[in-house]
Length: 430
Image (cartoon, rainbow, N blue to C red; front, side, top):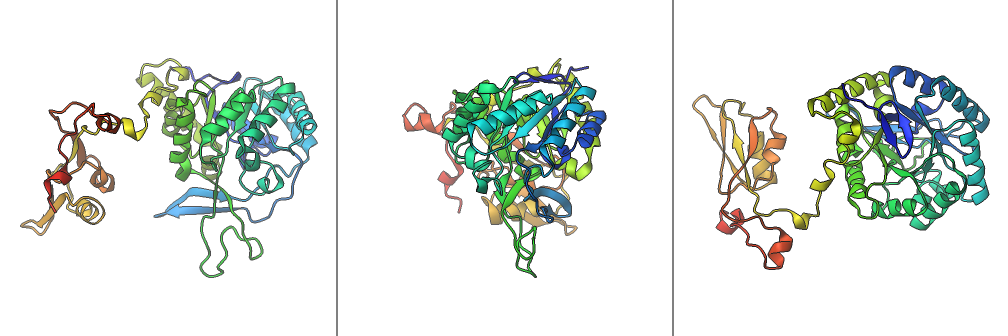
């Protein structure tokens, strides 16, 4: 059975699954119950000067009956006294010495204030620190959170202050509300960060009540932009994790991946793109701590299936496959193939292709009135849309078509070092 123990920038945990700094880690009782359920680590809800939260805090995006594909929140950092949080951190660490307890921190941008909070968190027993430079609402308006994370110089400076006194590993939590997350990661590394965690939530308004005209969540007839998380943000998070893993200046920097992780498969994807550990929030808020059982079993079985003994052997295996578009082979050809025995005649592929893509699927009525679809091979550009909309698994497959032309990227074509194969648009079908 695969060994799931992980080491993220020097922070050891029995498995790579951590709770993210959020409502599920607001109290010692919650963290204890999470560890009992099987979670390997927890990032304590952000400590700092306690604030006052609104009563109405969350809103969600649902899709076709699926609840909470995205969750928006306007909740801020802890509203509980610092002394209470520190005492509970000490209690948790004493009872669960082999689990990772990381403490998230956010205070005003003063060297002495950061020094004090770091010493107090480590004195309480923290295994590591996470600097919250990502919160996009409320705290950023006070010069903290994303207001720091969006300015590389600030990120570097405060990280340097923290490292002056920190005795435990320091992770910098990065904001996705930035043009190029690599700049923030480089700044964190320059400041001495032992690793980074990402992504924090994305600035958002999830919707507007069409009766009251107020965006959600509503607070006495007003609302505010908030932080967006959940399954909907996973593609954005994966891209940012991969970009840091591939960047020559941050390659090898330990990463704790965050963003829409709900299953072991999600976790495996983050690890393949360079993460060592993963953090979960929305899925726990939706389904509770017990989801960890399937996550642990699933990842362990997957590693066994792949013949891998430890999580580290999986880490980063997909990074080398991510390239700039200009490096892709323009002579790689795939074409749609429809299994007529599996086809239910819904005609969705025909509609999607003809109205939304490349008019490469034809349709006709069969003898029994059933719609029969077929691929117009010379028009098909292999865009994948038909296979994506098809409601029947493996009914439409994308099949590679051999070509007599050598691989050629846009970069090679522009420099005259390669030749492009004929394209469907060259044949004037329309």
